[in-house]
Amino acid sequence: MNAGMFLYSTSLLNDSFFEDTQLFITELNDKGAMGFVVNKLFPRKFNELVEFRHSIAFPLYDGGPVDREHLYFLHRRPDLIEGGIPVAGDIYMGGDFKAAVKYINNKSIATHDIRLFIGYCGWDPLELEEEIAEGSWEIKNTGALF
Image 1 (tube, rainbow, N blue to C red):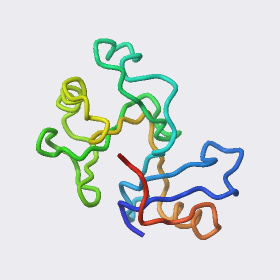
Image 2 (image 1 turned 90 degrees about the vertical axis):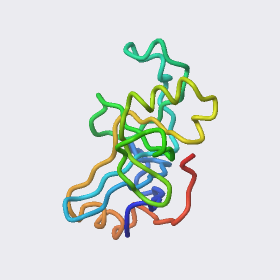
Image 3 (image 1 turned 180 degrees about the vertical axis):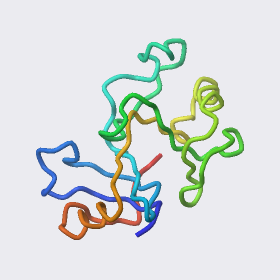
Image 4 (image 1 turned 90 degrees about the horizontal axis):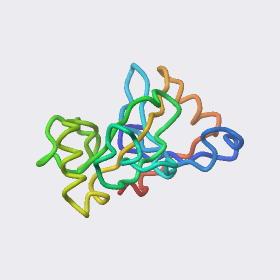
């Protein structure tokens, strides 16, 4: 198991936040794991958040139940958005948020390069591995991020 893998929920997680979810894992180490739900849209668009009301109507995703007061983002544009942390392949997490917003507002194709999330998913050390072992998640090497 490593960062960059996709997890799909099983029926063991039905009737929970994670029912029918696809996760993208961005961090997995001795401190725990972090990832984002990548297949559930948030009911509001980026420009419906008060502080971003002058932005375009860009989709937001419901990234997870942790820290739902903040926005997080994954992207494939380290050439335009500095400071991102490499996750896997051409995927980066975070970086210069102002540059990301500028790119979103100036590029109609940004949905192919950036994904915005409200909240994230987090696990304590070995917690995610235990959930996989009990059958709550299926590991896949491929999935749709952008």
